[in-house]
Image 1 (cartoon, one colour):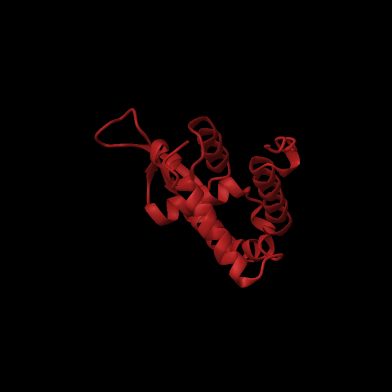
Image 2 (cartoon, one colour; image 1 turned 120 degrees about the horizontal axis):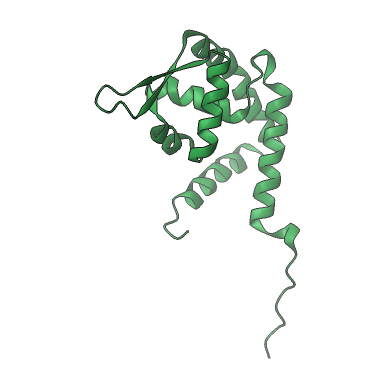
Length: 147
């Protein structure tokens, strides 16, 4: 005799739990980012440009995991704040290349210590072993070949 299936409780589902954990992280980010007043996605975009140099929108999508429409808006907002500038690829004038400005580099560098503190606060409920396990398991989920 088989047991009846467990009832579906949305609040116990992995997608719901991941979303709530991410919302908690974003709230911690906004509360602690400081004077730069960057959103989390703006900050990772600046970091991607700092780490990889001038990049096309397609390259930014690949390294930040932000969709094309959203990255366009992020870049426009960063440009309006003069944290990035736009140019064109010398080989393909249709391709927009995003460059980190000196003030964008300064904003990223100024925010880095705060970002480390934000990561610490996000993981504050976990002991050192749980932190390692959490990072390992999240990376393993991302490497899963099945969508």
